[in-house]
Length: 461
Image 1 (tube, rainbow, N blue to C red):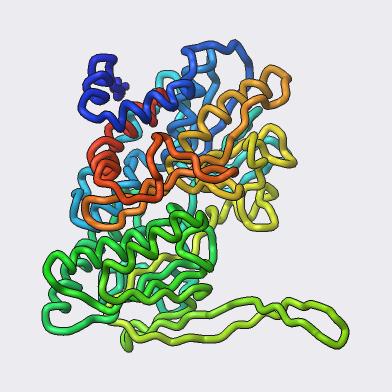
Image 2: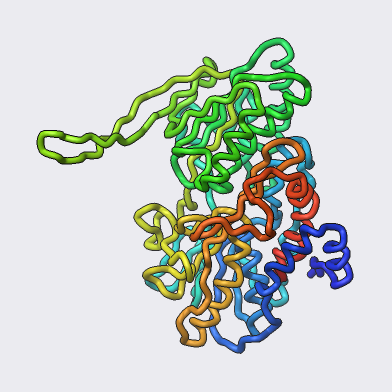
């Protein structure tokens, strides 16, 4: 196993290069755990091979004296998914995203089944793999991430991404280690620029009516592509069409993003719209505009909420699609799913509400916020402590505060680093967090990946 982590000397160099990185590391230094501190017995099975799974594996392997851990994941290639937006904007190359799970899964200490789970059988404390292997567990950690449903947009297929003015920065294949959508989006940026030299293209950016990985990504692509044209003295007619009621849930950042939009020529927001269908040849996108109206009956003094839905068809020259998202099918077909369609875990302990020996980490969790890599990092120490507590016949003692982070790229060279939790804003550094800053761009582009690769995935941060 490669020692894929920073030495003390390299960590000091990292902090010396970036005061921001030093501040972030200092503010969360308590999240690391001692080596081999718990002498507990029991078989832990981790399902998934992405960021949350690897972070948890690293922490549990180091926290337990004699760990019995099996990880079920088909992918040897690990993609640095936060970098997909930067690839889409031409600031990174695809090769910058590719890492090797072999550097993080020590097969001398951990059993690695390179397969997918076909069935979650929580009543019998077992999972069945795609190849038919039965794997029993004492503790199950679900870290299967999220899947994209392009097929739920009528008329659209994955094969359409990168053609006919259509792109989606999300499209990737973790098992094969591809980020087709990111590379297609950079080509899309340049096709849009060429079209803007002779016309004013109509460009649509969508956001679906489901929770999504990295909720700010649809707007990131809007602002970066608009700025890419602006740098060349070009423009387009931009439409941000979202199922949400506002640009951002936090009022200060919502206000700031409206100000950001004013620096570009023409951006029209269409709220409470979600993409239903695309006519690829005719370049027409059909949206459902769904909203509620409060109706007051003055005669009887009663109030009633009336739901409305209209079809809205928009023409486009270019469209960036964010598809509906959900957990993987195997989990959706299990008893582990909530009525809302996500892993049914407590929002603080990340322990399943019914099956107490099941925990979740990352995007799959059905909690109010947290479908970001930054949230998964904060999940890591919580689930590690709570799994050990359970193995010691104790109640879970660690609590997740809802921390999430959304680095909204507002232009090339500036980012709003939106950090918040269940209570509201939770900035790491004492800065006005709603303000776009170049220092956050430098941190996100240059410093985050080495921290992710050498500190986060190894459970040291």
